[in-house]
Image 1 (tube, helix red, strand yellow):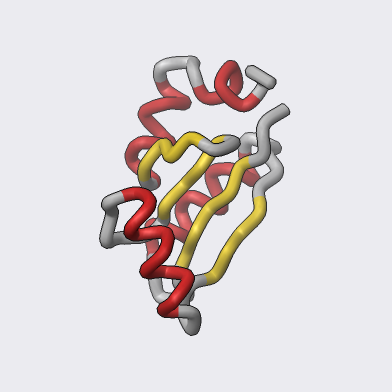
Image 2 (cartoon, rainbow, N blue to C red; image 1 turned 45 degrees about the horizontal axis):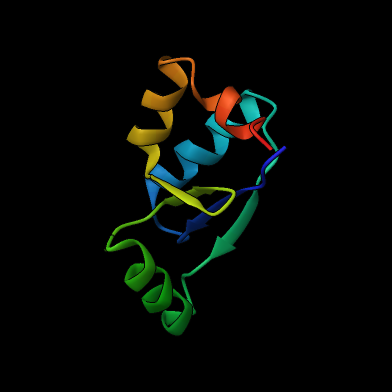
Length: 85
């Protein structure tokens, strides 16, 4: 099973939605709060090319934000991708 990592900030409603969504699916994840860590946020932005949160990874693959996560689930590919290891 691949590790799910979600980069968040405290004031982000989409971050909250993504965490609630993953919990509702029974998918364990690691949250990395970037609210007070601009250095780490800059590093993740450089890696992904994204300026907004949440930034969600499955294993080493960046899948996008909350909308991308829910689209992946709706297509039936989310669980397959997580279980691909």
